[in-house]
Image (tube, rainbow, N blue to C red; front, side, top):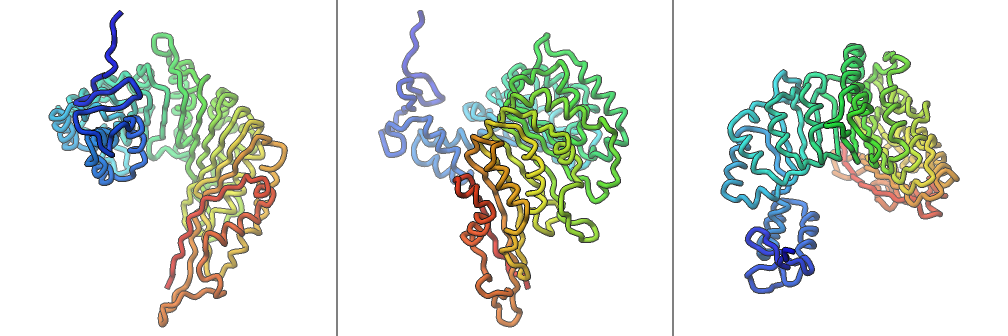
Length: 484
């Protein structure tokens, strides 16, 4: 039997199997003496900027290796020049290429519009040489490759150890090589997909027959060598429009029996939402997906739009314009998620005019009340906006009836194992500023500046039962803005 040395090579340094400590030739110091290298690598993940990482690299040799591992863990390619830059750098320093675990490919010329050809830099000579150097890539993100052809497929198939793939603004219908690519990545367990631009719900309805035909073809695709692609994580954007993608995922090519984390996001439909007439079975593909995996998912993220007023300036009292949220609430499909441990509702404020709080609370109550998840432990409402004007009494925040509904819901019998209800709030407090005195003026002098302590007291009183049980957790950002 071959004996292994307790010291393994790691670039110019050596890795000790005894205690996982990186050892080098330099004298022991505060920087690396006896400090496990795994701990150093973990520390670097919390360093926020590249400048700070460079400072860390000056501490010692061990810190330099750990910092470089984080600095080069993710690289982004947008142009042929960047391809040449990184290819030359990694040719000079091959060890740095091994640090790259996350690769991002972007089309710098798309500018949000749909091109009829993929970016040209992948066809240039530097791109194949660069990608061949990146042997340790485990996560790939591709954005705005509106067409996907054999050149792109051949390059990406080099990454046979790829575990995570993110595809944004890539059309399945116009890129026949793309499904085959995904089904030929044997280690893939995490898949994120977003719809191509211009494919909102209105456009999908105009081309509904072709979309359904494409979905049927994708659904009938056979898995690679008879083995379905087994996913653990699935994230879908624009679920209101990507019918063909949903149909494909529920076909024979995928094994979704081990999906434990699911993310579903959708866009808003604008003020003409009331004019949209959907076929009765429009959401059948989404329903099929939820029924297929609902009983296994433990973490669910739902991202939805929030409009607070229409074109005439009339405030919305609910999110009835959101046909996806309405469908989920009325169909009670979320009851399929019987093994949920965490659910997150995040909101996107499109018009930036009024509070998103009333509509966000209404959407949360309508969806959470349909859950049947006895193991649920955490509920999060994220990116909720509150805008307090000088003419408004901030205590009116607590008068919304949805607060009581939410309080009753989270403290009732539906979620016996619930441990936390986290609400993430961004509070913009607008105060008027006098032109002559530069003094901040509001209707009531004591309320001139709103503090997080005041808001915590107000919001805590909105959910007294949740507070008494220690469930409510508030994450607040308060910004006092002076308006002239």
